Image (cartoon, rainbow, N blue to C red; front, side, top):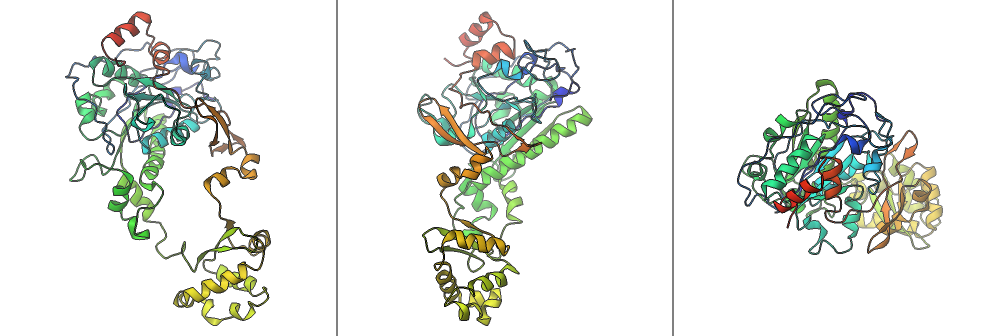
Length: 485
């Protein structure tokens, strides 16, 4: 339940990619009362003061090249009046404003936090997706052509990538090449808790939406900027995608080729969520927001500093072997587990002598005769079915698992029992298999989720519910090019 005090201390999230807009949450959509200029006051909201208009040149403002984000700063909490049918201060009717999105469950820790998502590609959307799973309201700002990761036809059915990343959010189209579009964004940011962007350096300056530009209108804003190599320095202007980020950070030392998991983007997303939630907590005490700047390369290097460089995830410590009935088993035997594994293998007929070979008692001995060691272990595992081996290995305290495909893992009956996976009906796609939120809080997992929005599906809804626009003002903003042509 959202507390009836300091509600504007809700969280939001930020990340790295795209040239979109920001959001500004309004009290009507939250079902709570939030004071725009500062603390949340139950039942009493201070009036919203619109941010200054943008007057700078609007041409060539948006850089859609993948890689870098610019600055963005949050500063004001939204002035939120109780939503229709809401119980003030509880957020009970939060979904009434954006019922199609299916987020803002009042029991979640970030319920009431409004996040403006200006990102694209992976790191930023992954961060906002996580914030949304924790209850934050996500407003995704897209250019008129749509987020590039929608594909060349933004009206085409959603890809599995898009379904995984962009559920539970509203889509607003703003043309940030036009002053009218930037003006709407600034209004949204003034009513938001968090803004996350991943523009290339210099773009936010041209758009006049840097932290310094936005903070006067919202001192409580958490502004998160995701970049490839940092906002300054010799590499700042280099295009950044996951492969070059891995190479720069040293990840290829592990495998000789890029890790087939976009660890640079994902590490940036993870650090972004941590930084944003920490900033939200700090704002509870200070009453002020801050500007967070994260480099994907530096985030990845944090992970690489504690990664496996000793071969723990490679033979002989980690083996992938076939059981007698066909399934492949991954068995890991670090440290003292090596002796336990040899003891189990020694119980297999014909493997007694191999299991007592003195060379296998040390990691160095196993490595010195690696092919012979792996071949002997393979003969033993092939003598029994997978279920028998899994039971024996578990009883001995040795980590092991059946090797599965991603689709196979998604169909695991234990995931279904825990409500960790399910199906979602997606327009043009039909039932799509999804992974639900991993957060189980007080024994409860968020089960409701909504499909990704169509491009600009919620533009007018957000302008009305969050900014209080009427038909005339929406039409004027559209005529000025702010909502695209």
